[in-house]
Length: 191
Image 1 (tube, rainbow, N blue to C red):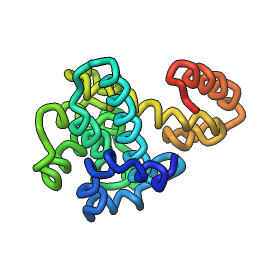
Image 2: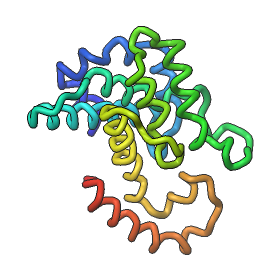
Image 3: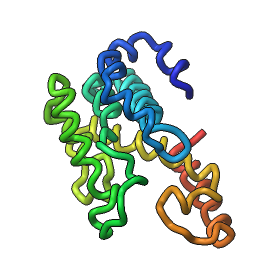
Image 4: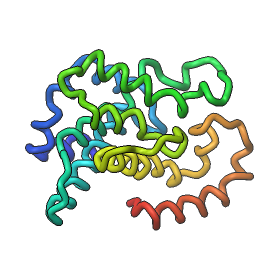
């Protein structure tokens, strides 16, 4: 879904408009996230979370929609594009550390939106890579929405090695990643 289509939803837009126009959020338009920007990825994650919250609300399940949406929007607010960083030991790589960095940046730039639920959702969205599971329902929604959006990389299996930082010949991974895409497509209901 495009930014234009997402932002037509007035209720959703009103929740996040101040964050979207902030220079720190706008800077994420220049950070690459797979095939598009971190800004676009975060916006899609926030909108997926918003849709999940609306569905839960229809079934009378209490959910803090605004907290979940804000966490979805800020979950990847890391400071520098990870592909520009020098090689690091495994547990210091982007996937293991960026959630803490994003939460710190959210506290600095968007303190008025931060609370224990938003902080938990941001710091734990990489579960199970980060081994502590989310504590709140809203945190789980951000985690699942992030996975749903990120697993779209399996649509183009030939590019998968570069997404995860490997220089493996594509022909060795293509068939396997195609199988993984179809598995995740069915499990996460990818488009």
